Structure formats: structure tokens, C-alpha cells
Amino acid sequence: MSAHILAWFTLDHIWMLIGFGGQGLFASRFIVQWFKSEMEGRSVIPVAFWYCSLGGGLITLAYTIHLGSAPLILGQMSGLVVYSRNLYLIFRERALLRDAAAGGETAR
Image (cartoon, rainbow, N blue to C red; front, side):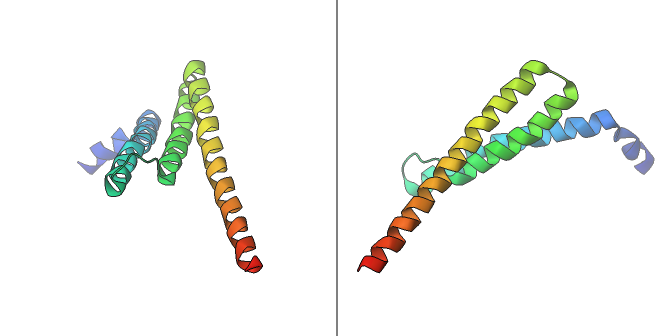
């Protein structure tokens, strides 16, 4: 039985699992967003949404590179730009708010 299970783990099957893992992580971002919105009682996009997008996108990009599909590779790469940019904007805004708060405390 165990030999049969081990025989299943071919390179193609491992790549298939990687592809499913990337898609699963990518899809989990909607659950994260839904739960956070329910907690807040309004529609919000938490930072974890962008991390799930970025992580799932990177894993899926690796899978599409393995497949060698130029349209899928381009699609994944363009999404990664958007997810990275959103995280950058979020962290830049937080840094500006921290700086403003620190400046406001010293002026008092």
C-alpha cells in the first residue's frame, strides 16, 4: 500500500499539488476578507488579503512557469505587481501615520 502511495508522487503530481496549493492560498483571501468584514460590520480589505494574494500569486506563478504557458505567466506577473503595490501603499501610509504621531507627541 505505501509503495503504491509513494509511486503516485511523481514530479508532475508534485507540481499539480503546488498548483492546487497556490490556488488554495489565493482563494483563501476571500475567506479572510469575508471574516474581517463580518467582524467590522462593513466591507473592508485587510492586509492579510494582500498577503494571501501575493503568496498565492507567487506559488501559482511558479506553477505556470513550470507549465510554460506565456499567457498564464503574464497574468500572474501582472497580478503580483498590483498586490505588491497595495502592500507598499499600506506600509507607506502606516509609516507616515507613525511619523505624524511621533511628531505630534514631541510638540505637546
